[in-house]
Image (cartoon, rainbow, N blue to C red; front, side, top):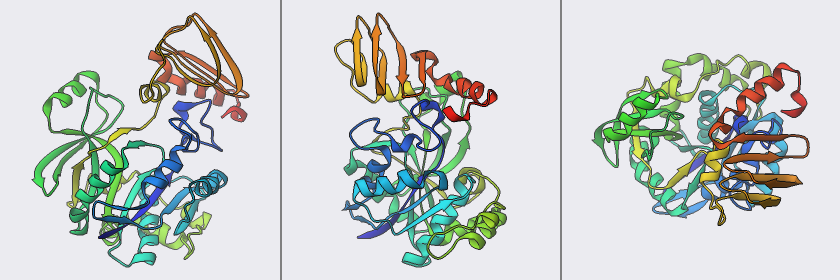
Amino acid sequence: MINIRPAILCGGSGERLWPLSRKDRPKPFHRLLSDRTLFEDTLLRCAGQGEGIAFTAPLVIAGQAIEAPVRDGLASAGITPAALAFEPVGRNTAPAAAIAALLAQKQDGPEALVLLVPSDHHIAPVTKFRETIAAAAPLAADGKIVVFGIPPTRPETGYGYIRTGEALGEGFTVAAFEEKPDEATAQSYLQSGDRLWNAGLFLFRADILLSELARFEPEILIAVKESLGVDGAIDAETFSASPSVPLDIAVMERTAHAAVVPTRFDWSDVGTWPSLADALEGDANGNILSGDIVAFDSKNSYLRGDGVTLTALGVNDLVVVATGDAVFVAPKSRAHDVKKIIAELKAGGRDDRL
């Protein structure tokens, strides 16, 4: 049995799911796909044992502004974390990975295996998730920093891609990390057979990750080491000195230790209202209804009312989301542009709605 220390990342604002997702309660802390939040689902997925691996108590790394929903989610899931680390300022995923590696070493020793997991993705079933992690564990134990790749199902322009290299155990070497493509390039990637979507999910030995950070981004490692207390407390002044860099850029695009393992599970980043609708089963009219909804002569729409009664008459192919203080209406084909609304609200000083 291989022990793996999950490190759950609760970063990002989830702005594309506004007006539901807000600064003080972003996407992971809402019930979008079931009666549990995405955060609770992530905690439960990364618990227990099976397929030759055992998940130990998780580390949770989050922003200070969302401490309350993090603690609420842990209680709801019945999970006691090994450590909680609340970042005073956001510094992207490379510093968060350093926090995870250092805390894991205190729990499990220098060669602790760490699974870095976003808290806002939908993954199913759990058995296939464990199979995928188990397939990657020997590579990680041997010193590879494993990123998990999603076999693409469409010419997606919203994700980064990984080009696979030579076969390596249950995965491949990484030939290249590729930026979000245009439509034509995405189509060629889909047809190539050697591209995977970058899931932002990593498995690594703590000592290897820290040695690569020391090599490529020493300022990050210094700031994290100086700011991180034994119990996970983070000093704001010293942590703020860390550069804000994604793990992909800080380490993965530069290291000789990178490997990629294709996933075996169903996956969605649930990043937009249309992608959320795609992950759910509609009614006889193709509508997704969430909350207190009255819909008549309407088709193929996502209608959600949180704390309000939402009614719709004769609407087709719309996203309508109503909360207690804001309503968002858009054609499904334009709903991903919600950030333009957020930019207007910010420009108008309407932070009270964000």
